[in-house]
Length: 522
Image (tube, rainbow, N blue to C red; front, side, top):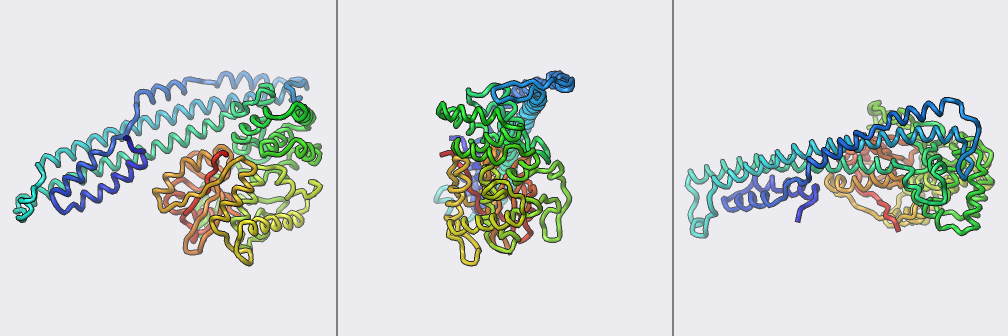
């Protein structure tokens, strides 16, 4: 049976040690044969190259330019779709979608070509290593029998063994390097392809009850402020879940949703209604929600319903602060009041506080209860602070957190992730303990796929300063976006996550990620 790339990497790493420390001829032969039994990197590089080049030939630049020309001609205020979308808005959205599809084809093709090159090099290096191991075996000859073990090796035999061991160390070292390269390349292509698939957004809204124009507008609508590409209101998971729920509505509820969508004042209002449906709310609850948000401009909607906005320059490297955290942090605020544990950072409710903000990111009704109060109309930072802290305390108590608003055990954390975040995403959250870099590397693809789809992943970190809970909320390239309940977001690299540099999202006393909570569909 062929091992996974991660298993091959670990096994050959262990055999590097076994070969270099083999104390007898027979032990060395056994270790070499064990290394040769590890499977070589697998994959058809010619097929990968063909597919990569084929995808990159799908040039949509001309289509994008033609759509852009139409959008700039000053279309009349006519309506399209069942939900009364302005035709001009629909054309602009089509242009954005064409650009996104073009980027997806090119990016997906580039990912496959990069993987093919890395795999080709890894296969060559692995083959060289195997040939070196076979040469070492030829030097050693057959195994010694029990009679040979009664006598010590003479100097010539010992010299042959040591030379063979040195040669075998080089060979297994080449195989290990090839396994590392193949594993890294496999992770990178999986990460990139998952990301491009998640950005094929209109396909996710599978319901047959909306026109293509309606689906296009919902998929392409972003919150105001920040980078539009990084701030779509409906995530890939939202679109898929909303489509499924739309198809299961009764005729009466379906008619009510159609009326609400058609009566919306803006594409943003329409998208938030669908996000509420994705979050599991009933049509009656969504009608009440629309009554609170209807008539408000997109900036008001963004402030009240989207806690985290990703700035255009959020991934710029601005170095580290004296405490070891990134200088480039964006504060998560409502009217100047941070989404922060204890309202001012003084309490140890990091688990509950991370969970509150994660739920607010995926459920606009929950967010509005916190920002706008019972009426949904409030714009009072002090009142928001009181409600935020009360909700943090409620979840801290539900998760059996410690006295004086300090600490929470893993069982409690998993429980409130399920009842709070999972209740809105339809997921069951399960803890995965991470005992070092190999475990972090192994879980990374699943983490990145979840957050690329729009499903937050709680992460616990530890170090000389104790332990702390944060949430992974986004992924772009080889970077992860982290929400810290001290009231900020920032980006760390995959290598930071794997190799114990998570202090960049907190401080240098909290470097090691020791557990994550992954969502799985119920």
